[in-house]
Image 1 (cartoon, rainbow, N blue to C red):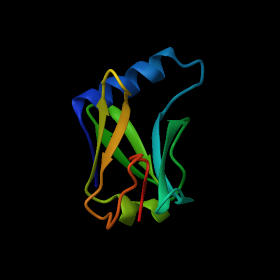
Image 2 (cartoon, rainbow, N blue to C red):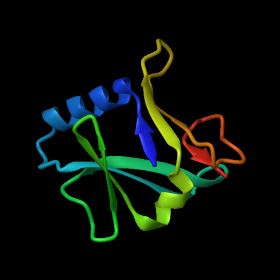
Image 3 (cartoon, helix red, strand yellow):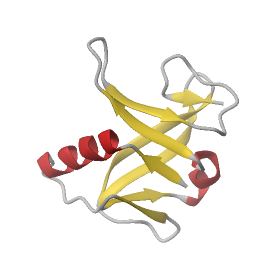
Length: 106
């Protein structure tokens, strides 16, 4: 389904541990929009919704809704530290096109 690199898992666990919100896991989804038709969204979530698929990535629960599931199948999420910009990157084998920003696909 979705894979997270060790770097991504560590960055997310760090964000969850410093958050004041109750966190049951990470929600990963897509929405219409962005430069190429869809954009990635991630955020800390309290708990899974009834139609979510729950994936365990090294003790981190990842929640994926049914609408996003097929678009995200096989996607690898990484966290990259770089002098110019740091952040999450998505390698999605289902994307026919990707925006140079790395946050949207078509």
